[in-house]
Length: 277
Image 1 (cartoon, one colour):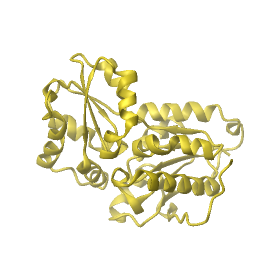
Image 2 (cartoon, helix red, strand yellow):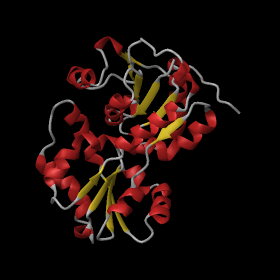
Image 3 (cartoon, helix red, strand yellow):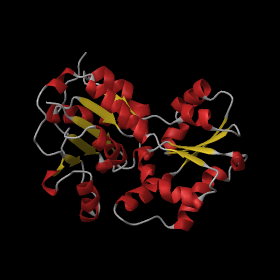
């Protein structure tokens, strides 16, 4: 009975879910939002890694997914290796689209919008050195964008002045005027993509990895032998570790993505989870 589990700290991973729906018609896609400690980019690494491994393990135990998509750049760069070591379920992660940006740029200067944790993590420097050695990478830890994205999903567009101020943290850096490609290094930013395009010059290309992540999930799921079984008729579950703010405002967007109101459930990961050796 195939199922997909998508995991993020908030609504960011729903951009991946939106891309998965047409690729996997009839396949249940459960969602776990760790709203109790949103945003992930502001949490200490060691504490956050342990929490992610425990929380995702609890979700695997209860929901029995065929594939888990860690639809969060911070969680992927921090805990994906630990998750793969702990559990036998296939994982698909999200990483900043540095290689894609390097392939697209004409000026040789590429930008990245991400959480502060992702921007300062050694993983990003390794990606840049490996996939964009001939490019100048300018990155901005855009703390305010995740909150704007949460509001946008709830139907409140970002304030244009505040959005431009946040984007200035990238484009106003020395050399920032040469940026012609910007990669989204946080899945939340999918819900601001149109607003960011409108706020910046039209020559800037914006790269959203959500469609590519969804295609990879579909490829991995297609290789799972469980796909030969019957498709589950149980409703897709939307779980959260703390009551999301303005839950009523979330419901229209969740309904559009296939989550019924009676499938919105709190998630308690307090029971201990055994990891494989």
